[in-house]
Amino acid sequence: MLSPRLALFLALSSSLVACSGDKSDTGGDDGATDDGTADGTDGTADGADGADGADGTDGADGTDGVDGTDGSDGSTGGTGRVRLAHFGVFPGDTDTDVAIFVNGAASGVEFAFKQATPFVELPSGTYQIDIVPVGKGIEDSVFTIPAFEIVADTDISAFARGYVAPPSAGDNTFGVGAFVENRSGIPAGSVRVNVIHAAPLGALDPVDVWLVDGSCAPTGDAPLLNDFAFDAVAANLDLPSTEINVGFDVGGDATVDACFQIPATIVDEIVNVYAVNDSAGDVSLVAVFPDGATAEISPVR
Image (cartoon, rainbow, N blue to C red):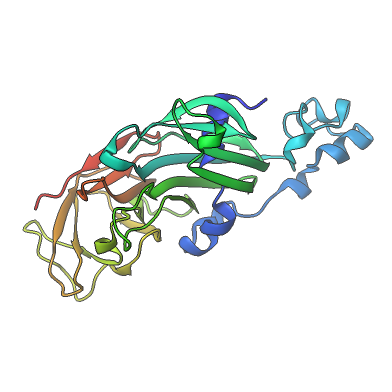
């Protein structure tokens, strides 16, 4: 039986197959290859010859290549790592906590708006997940995630985004995105920033993202990110680990409409920076650090 903590991470990682390939430019370099076959991975194979002592259980019961207890999860051996963030916008920003259901059963896990989690290791395999408002049953699922695959030796960040009830036709609806994190080759003294457009407000789709100076004036001859669309991920931006000032240009006229000052942060690691908005349309950035801690950054103007 999946633990509640495990179920939480599984819940929002289902978009790996659909999202990670086309939303992250190089994120799969460090772990996109499933090493299950090379390791002698499959519970069926293990049980057949009883020879796999890697996990201490497979050869004995032949049931599962990861936990030796349940062959129904389609495990193929090895583990991946998954963490998640919740930026789904609920009406009035009330009752934003969601419960995670795994294979139709409540896991007991709840998760709130603008929260994130640290990584957890997950058995590779396939799962079925539902996201349900806290206190409701499976019949009240707001998002059903089809069967999906967790790949061994891969770091995945998954995130809920979009309006549960879009206020206008041009706004983006609720769903799940995911991308693969790549920790290889971060220059010494730098921070690797992944920028994710998770703000569903139609007026922000797309937006130009500029590096700006201390007075919020654009620097350079072109935006850092041009026509940055909702659900897009700009991965592997290696930047000096100092204060970073960025501006959003909504009209594409090199005029900064919202300016943010991201303080000096960690080095030799990854920070994910999500552009988000609440139900009132107020925009902010949420930085997610390696341990799952978050910092919300409001615009300075």
